[in-house]
Image (tube, rainbow, N blue to C red; front, side, top):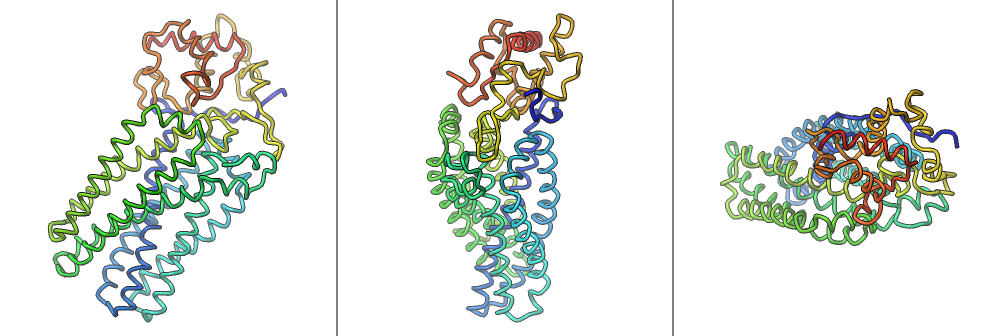
Amino acid sequence: MDVIGQFPLFYFPEYGSAWMMGITGTIHILASHTSVGAAMLFAFLAYKAYKENRSDLYPYMKKYGMFLLIFSYVIGSITGPGIWYTATAASPRGISALIHNFVWVWATEWVFFVYEVIGVFALVYFIDKIDKKTHLKLTYTFALASVGTLALIIGIISFMMWPGTDAFYTTGSASDAFFGINTFPHMFLRIGFMIMMSGVIGLVISSAMKKENPELSAELSKKMGYVGILGGFLTTFFFMWYMNTLPENAHAVFTISKESIVQSRLVLMGLFSLYFILVIAKPRFLNVPIASVMIVVILIAGLWPGEKLRESMRKPYVAGQYIYSDQIISRDVPGKKIKSELPAIAEKGLLKLNPFIPDRLRTITDENRLEAGELLTKLSCSNCHSLEKTGKFRPLKDRLTGMDKEGVMTILHTIGEGAFPYMPKLKLPEDEYDAMAEYISSQQY
């Protein structure tokens, strides 16, 4: 093996590479999860309006739909390609693995998504132009398309955590990759959160109707409070199931900060439970500013920590438990004719095998040792860590403060073992270890 299939290095200073994808992804998830939850809520409201002849519910659905068009389908459509861009830059081999395993699944998901986008426009435009029964059927198909989109994407995202069975490595089959033991708990966990989000967004819309129809506003606010409580309960219940379907490396990461994670989740769920109970008991108390603030609370205190936790628990892998977060293939996958790159890297080194290394750095000398060490550190560490002294996310300075070169060398030799099982095993020639340790210790963290 003369070269390994690496891509040019992408590094975003002070934040690290992968966090750009995480920030974009969190905003996208808020928008997309709202759309799926709203689709299910629309089906419920349309059924209620049809069965009980409640024409007064349609203006609420129309306002909700208009909000959804901007909040979910504009913001979501912008941040969706943003995820593709940042993910392809930060983790090209991870994206490549997903495409090679799930290209037809993704194609099918796009069919559902196109119908979903057309469906939400049709729901809003035709809400008072067609009969209630036809509108109800249209609403049902919209909900099915939205849940179908979720189900297809969840199989892909769950594969990023792990296939769930060793059969995939032998067969390379898309079905063995898609239907892991983690897939359905993950899907129901997100459905619970989506239901809660539909209630939170619904409270914004119902509170905005207070002046024009206070009685309907109070009634719908109470209903959205119950929807929110149901979603919160389902999220908590399926989270416990989800945690029992994770691989050992995920539990190793979770255990490190288990106490603080559990406490923060309990505080957050307690806050939202109190909010929903207050809305149910005193619906007229609610106003647009309070309801809007709760969306921001979900984004900052709920989604962002949750997505960071999921990304962390996937480590040391970025996809399928065979591609490390530093983009190195760590095991054989006979079903895909993929070979582990670890033995060749341990023998020849990253500088020799990576095709995008400048020729002047392929051989380490006294003159280029620091520059080679910096490049090796970025190649090996920047997908999870920021490297500068002012780094924001998982900065190396927090882990290596005051360490000399020998201390750094000790850590480099034990990565992936002992106290660092969640990090990619880093087996390099000694001269590359030495260059990395020289560079890291020279930063005087």
